[in-house]
Length: 231
Image (tube, rainbow, N blue to C red; front, side):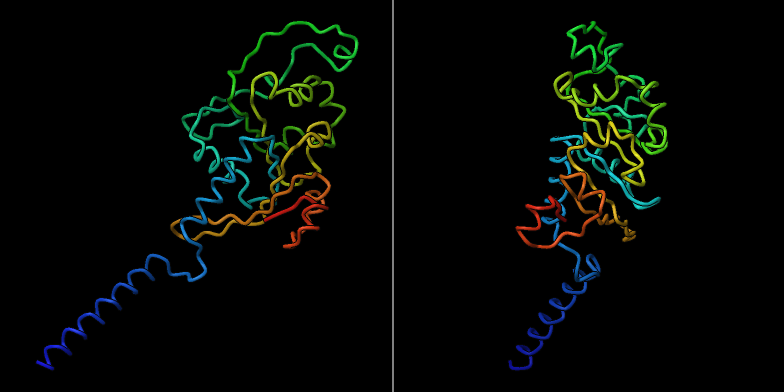
């Protein structure tokens, strides 16, 4: 009887060990956060891109377009972009980000003219490689080529309930009239290939000055109040 009892105990121990090994095989890295953690991060991403105009920046290959693609797939809605991301993308040239022939002077002088809308409401626009298409070193040329884009950028929520997001390598390389209107900034530091998935390391900011300096956040309330930065 005692031998049978010991045998049952041994079998239970073996089953418990096998269960642990299976769990370790699924999550080999003890530091990997729970699914709830990733759900929380994804929910924050969707909330941020839904809330405001987000500018994503980071070195070449850091994961900027990967972040765009992930956000787009998380949201799962139709959108506009200057390149195709998935089947829900409608590719529209940057010329479409316009309020017609209207200028800042027209707003000041109350001489606005009607223009035909080309976007549907509540669909965001994503600009990939904004540092190439809208580089700050050509500010004067951009002022002429896209003279009303800054106005459209500023009024996109009022006009179409939409946001305009951009990604580029260096924050300072974006056309000045656009980068200074950014509401949220996301510095993509690096992306790690975990075989079955990618982990993107990023820092978010709500102030341009903090993002430009790439300040590293400290878990301190005064720091957040001063610099508007967080992980």
